[in-house]
Length: 317
Image (tube, rainbow, N blue to C red; front, top):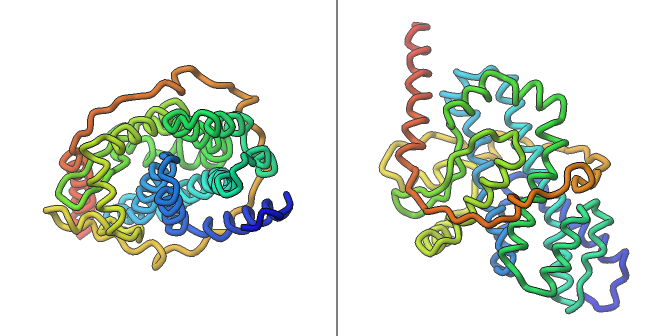
C-alpha cells in the first residue's frame, strides 16, 4: 500500500474489498477468520467468524427434511432472509472498520476518522481511537459486540416485515420457548461448547450472549481446541463440517453454495444507533462464562423436532 494514497484511494479500496468479501455467508466467514489470523489482537474477528459459521449452519438447517416438513416454504424463506440480512449488514458495517485498522497499522497512523464515510457509529469511532492509544483488546472486543447488535436492531429485528412475519410467527415463538437454537463452538472431538439463544429480539440479550460466547471461546480449555478445528475445516455451511467428529448420525445439511443463490442487498441510509438509545453500563461489563459441553442438550432438542417430523410423516401414510 503506497504511503501517498489519498483519502479517496482509501475509501475506494475499503469499499471495493468490503463488497468483494460480502458476497455470501461463506465469504464473510472466511474474511473474518483470515483477518483474525493476521491481527489476533482484534479478538472480535474470531468471534464474528465463529458466529458467522453458525449462521450458515442455521441457513442450511432450513433445507433438511425435518424443517421442510415443519415449516411452510414461505416461512423457511423468511428465516433464511433474516439470517442473511443480519449477516450481510454486520459485515458491511464491521469490515470497513477492520480494514481501516489494517491500513492504520501499515501507515502507523490512525485513520479511524474515515469511518464516518461508512456511517459507522460515533461510539465505534471513539472506541477505535481509544484502542489505538491503550491496546485494550478486551474493551474493543466488547465494544464491537455492542455495536454489531445495535446495528441490526432497527434494520432487521424491528423492521416491520421481519418483526411481523418472522419474530411474531409461531415457528420462531416455539423455537424461542424451547431454546432450540444455540451458538456452537465445535472441536475436532465429540465435544461442542457454546451457549443457547434466548429472546433473540432483545438487544441486551444478544450482547450478553456475544460476551458469553467470547468468554467461552477464549478460555484456556476451549481456544486451542476451536482453533485446531477452524484451521483444519473450511466453512461450507453444512453441519457436516463438525458433525464428522461426533459420535452420532449426520443431520444431512447440504453445502450452502449448492442450495442458496447470492442475494443482492439494498443498503439503507443508516442512522447512528447511539443517538437513539445510548449505552447501558451493563453492556460494557465483561462476563466470565464457564465452558460446558452442550452437544448432548443441543442434539436432544433437535431429536425432538425429528421425532415430531416422523410422527407427522407417519400420520400422512
